[in-house]
Length: 128
Image (cartoon, rainbow, N blue to C red; front, side, top):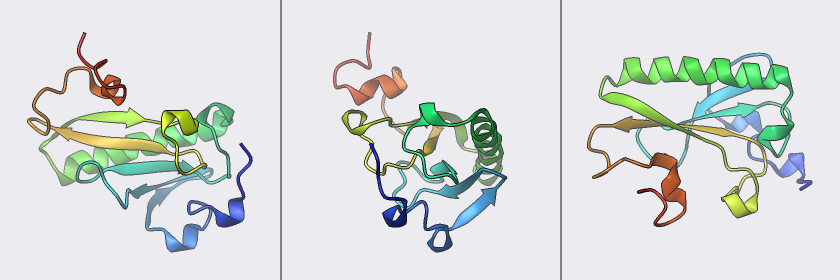
């Protein structure tokens, strides 16, 4: 899909609250968090899909994911785990067509039974 970067919320970086950045990516806290301290890692280049990222962009995104993980755990020791997720394409739930990686902190008891994790995006498939 070809989406206009001039209309992209992530390309308008000046209006975002960036907390960390490196050569090709930046990190921020999600404005509509799933859990407290939910973060996003976003490549600076306007690109729709994760699978089209360059090796450098992948490495820079990974570096920021680790940095944000460490920062989140220091801010909130109750964070015991994370879900890392990427929606690739409209059918997968992508609504902002600029690649971004979700880093969702998880705490004991935040859901009744966390088994299955991201498998729950398809109802009934989380438990097997």
